[in-house]
Image (cartoon, rainbow, N blue to C red; front, side):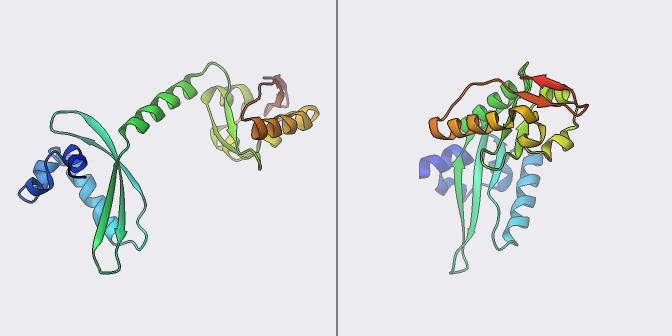
Length: 178
């Protein structure tokens, strides 16, 4: 909508026709970064979604998701979504996740592939971040608790949650209870 455009760019669409790129993007580094991104994406058949942080004229930092599409008639279409609130929540979640005093490991429910973990998990288990990222939860859960873990994962899939303790095997072979 025109109001959304005005909030994102800082001027109404009609005003935009008389506005230079430098006025829309008042910070030179922003303008260079966005110009390079568009040049690159225009050459691609299927451009990726882009998340861009932009500082408005009034100093407010906002996040936007841009999706560039090539239309059949040769025109290009850009879809822009304000994702500022989502990014704020992601940053808060990330800070809580990373600073948690407990080891936290997220894994795929079906395959067990580890998809995210915090620094405390790396410290506790003794694996490097790269080593841990290449493991499955079944690689590190202690042998005697594997079947219990599988039943807890099934409960999480069915109920949406579960709380339990298990044992993990550290890189050194030591068993730690979590």
